[in-house]
Amino acid sequence: MLLLAENIQKRFDSENVLEDISLEVNEGEVVVIIGPSGSGKSTLLRCLTQLEQVNSGRIEINGKLMVDTVDGRAVYADSKTLHEILLDVGLVFQNFNLFPHYSVMKNIVDAQVNVLKRDKEEARTIAMELLKKMNLSDRGDAYPCELSGGQQQRIAISRALALNPKILFFDEPTSALDPELTGEILKVIRNLANENMTMVIVTHEMAFAKEVADRVIFMDNGLVVEQGTPEELFGNTVNQRTKEFLQRYSDI
Amino acid sequence: MRIDNVPIDLLLKNMLSATGTVLLIFFLTAILSIPLGFVVALARRSRFKIISIPTRIYQLIFRGTPLMLQLFFFMYGPFYIFGIGFGRFNACIIAFVINYAAYFGEIFRGGIAAIPKGQYEAAKVLGYSKFQTFMRIILPQVVKHVMPATGNEFMTLVKDTSLAQVISVAEIYNVATNAGARYFSTVPLIVAGIFYLVMNTVVEMAFKLIEKKLDYYRT
Image (cartoon, rainbow over all chains, first blue to last red; front, side, top):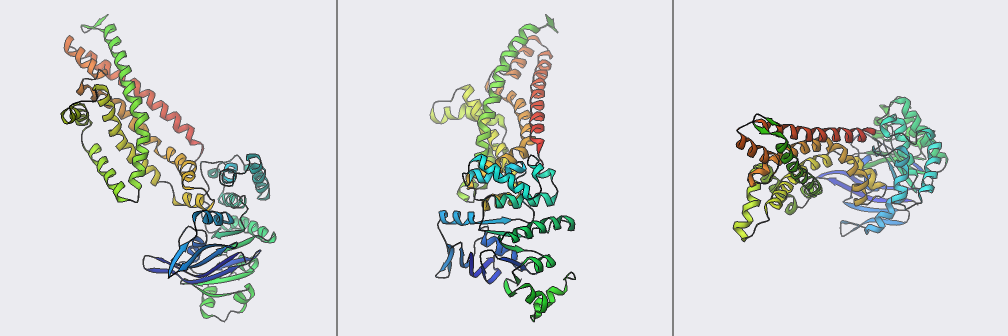
């Protein structure tokens, strides 16, 4: 098991954003999380990638314990372990968050060289391969502001992949893109799924979720309402809340 | 040659040597107050109130009182309090550096605050340390952000050097008023104005060039 999260709770001020979330992700699995805005999907990803700290619960990634609850309080691992766990995960943001002052090539190379201490030439070779895979071989010298949203997101995915994460998280990767560009990104994610990349994807693209997911999780109000195969959820769910939510999407 | 009874070649010679003093004040202040300004900006952003509040009070005092008074303070204050002074030129530089660091602190604080949170988050998830994040990701973008305001500040600094005359530092304005009084003429003041304008033209063009160099990307 690559990721194990148990009884995650997260409060902002006094509001419980994550009530009690448990999640398991196996190697090579594609898990898609759906649910209405404010249901805590993004917060969950942010807790798993250490952008937020949980209030209680237990998270284990790639066999390393990130946080556990002792006497009702969340206790995080030491900073060295946390850094190692960070290197096991990658995160793709809704609004890309590329470094605007770096060229496309440097965006992909910089963390490899400065975080992983990879040799510069090796890092460049890896970046070139990723750019080729993303159909962006000729844009290495461009700056993010010169690229379309779809291209920027493909660079952001390359930047994350360059560090060889064991598991890749996507936080609404297509929400800032128009339908045409959305297609570009979904194609990239589909290819990654075919290569057995372990992924956790938060998305509102239901048709895509149905097609690419090994398992779908429906979240609402900080709780997992239902989870199962795409057929179980989209086909014939008996859960009233899931039904209500899915009715709003006509494309499935 | 004389214009309006003023021996122009002598005046220009004195002005040029005073320009040396002005440039020295300018460069020393710039070189010292910019790094100090960054420290002030970071101190202001500190989550520890024991650091951020005194910093804010320091900025309030030095932005809220005339630089002229601050020059007097650093010139004569130590003498009254400790019995020894810094010396004329040192007192002048100390006053300028501490004053300008307060302003730069505010400019840089704004520049740092303008960087979107997503940049920090992307860097963190990629495994950059806090120091790497600041040096490699945040600072280069801050530099671009603060360039116009910094250019503005530099032009003000060129003109503010004229205040050093209140503690009798022989800079351009000091030379001009002395010559004006001696020859009963406004010509030295006009010449002084031209000197400041020429220096600030250089500053303006330099910043234009830097901004153009930094124009290779947009945020």
